[in-house]
Length: 416
Image 1 (cartoon, one colour):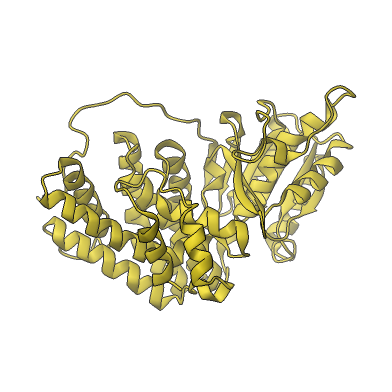
Image 2 (cartoon, helix red, strand yellow):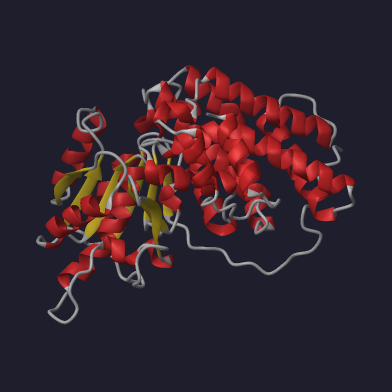
């Protein structure tokens, strides 16, 4: 048995599992949405979508017919770009004036994050008083606002159309303000996990390769970072291993053929799993960096993760190897996990030891970065001096090594 195929936790330690949504998985499962809404007594709903690709599709036409059949009225809200405080507040104000009972997000991570935030803000708007006016969503964001987010929200269903963020399984909505003094922060509460997640592979068919690749590498990053996180558990390890195995097979296939339904379904499930593992084990320095970068430039979250993943992973492994050689047991365990991750992403290749697994992991990540032309940071206008400043603001989160500012800057400049 390969030396990294061991139980990473020698004993069962206490841990907590966050809530997960009800799930409908499978091609055509969007057809179940109208019945789910009807069963819960939702007669008026708000549906957040992205651009026009969904609404021009047969799936949208069928959904409209299904809703009409169930006597469910809806208002559609179009989401363009990553959600900002202003865009969330605008949609929430519109929704609050109606009798909308449930919000449905059908789209990428930005659409689902918008749906989550709107579902949380509408009750506040409806219950505001002269002495307790609506403060706007920014007032409730971590690290930006000063108020605790409300525990009450509207009904909430999440239907991803890109396999990346796993937002359909998490309790936070990421809100961005881009530019000088910008930020990328979360609206977070245990009650913000969607009531329902629908993983319908048919909705992913034909997604452009650039979006497919960036989104997929976001999911891979989340699976890898949660797997090696210092807060990982026996529960998250088991899920992350399943997700990495699926992504290793499905990711190259969905990038090569956007109409491979089986691969799309597998990648959708891997992304969903990544949402559960990040919610329960946290993430690492790549996501810490992506949040900082996304606050000052219009860089898609998946592109930020995808462009930094190889360089960050290589540096982490180098530091772990040095620490393990010096006798650190925790570093040796983390190295075994990185080796295991390399094996899982390449399940069809022979891998007998940690060194082979680590080599496979790094070779795979750089191959994907180059094959799918993940853009460097300079594409988005970043400069060397700017990145030095941003390195100092980057949170390493639960990465299993400690980074200096200069080391994070090196990760950035490697991808400049």
